Amino acid sequence: MASPTPSKPDADGRAFYENDVDFDVLAAHDSDFAAICKVSKHKRWIDFQDPKVVKQLTKSLLKCDFNLTLDLPDDRLCPPVPVRWNYIRWIQELLDTTSATYNDQYDSNREVHGLDIGVGASCIYGLLACKTRPNWHMAGTDIDAHSLTHARQNITANDLDPRIKLVQTTTEDPLIPLAAINRSKLDFVMTNPPFYASDQDMQSSYINKVAPPSAVCTGSANEMICPGGDIGFVSRLLAESLELKHSVQWYTAMLGKMTSLQQIVSELKKHEITNFAVTGLQAGARTKRWAVAWSFGDRRPRNEVARHGDLVHAVLPAPTAQTLAVPMMDARWAGERVDECLRTLDVTWQWEAAVSIGVLEAGGNVWSRAARRKRKFASEAVEGEGLRDVKMAGAAEDGGRGEKEGVALAVKITCKKEEVELRWLRGKDHVVFTSFCGMLKRTLTGRA
Image (tube, rainbow, N blue to C red; front, side, top):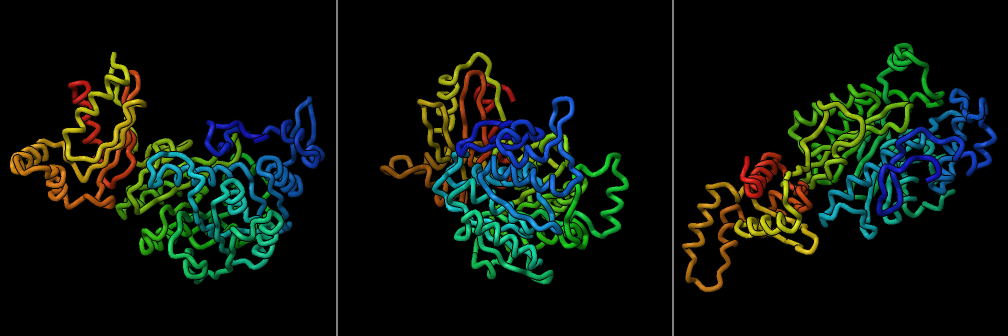
């Protein structure tokens, strides 16, 4: 990318925006942007209160960093690119780290279907998602015909008509109109809802700020205001998700305030939704935004994805990783101990000794003393009965977990010099994960 500082290398070559846009770099790549820059003391700057300047910044970033073209009407929102891209990038990582393969990496062969609720005139989320992931498909909705007209023009201008489909809805329609978009299941839903509950609410937010808004706002009333503001909109999305549940793998939403994020996380907990993720989307020193995602499935995102960005402790989900310190031990020695231990349990265990990495699947807590006694009795009962597999006896006691859907816990174990990393891949109960971590720690160190 021309402008951001990459957070880390990624398989598909993309990264989060982390810092303010480097105007010098962008101007060197795009003459249209260079033309609207001002220079003082050898430093480039732009007037964020000029709508034409703000629009050019968005167009230049999309052109230079994503090879996208964009045309916007003067009376609709101009989307800042960094925060929008960070939202898309985070969703990509959510899906990459909760796939059925357990590999935590981008799978270019995976076909993904998403929905953007409220595409606006730019359709920026659909454009970014499909431009950076060739096997992704997007549906989009909006209640505003004027915005949809421009959104369709942007889709066509970027040759993405086959992969982005738009539907006009009303305020009475479901937020997730599966029938209207001709889908029974979706991999994710996203939305950047109006943040304010009323015009008075919006005006008071500006008055209460210490500094003026970082950029001029050209949004229409329907883009800025809805009943209950962002909390009301996302609460409505949550209510629909409680009905649809597994029809969508990840429900996600952007929020305008940390207090809004705290309220939505509190609502998730009230409904006993424990598989959720949160992120701070800020890029540089300007406007802060946050996002939340929740799932009714049991695939757990990587820890740095589930708890990503600048956040407060109250909104954090349960960790999906633990690191066990094993002083004076190399990876091979630790791996042998782990392999030896897990082969005694009633689990599915795949171990790659050459790289000291393994994946465990269990139907429940089979490492407790009670479970070990049951296994011992089962082993004695079948002794002498030929080739009957003791593991099948244990599986029956655990509810017949021979099928993949019977997995209560999946963990990836990576042995390194003086430490063992445990990555929670799958499961609904964090207590089971922490119990397994405790058992393995005792095995490796002899300490609780």
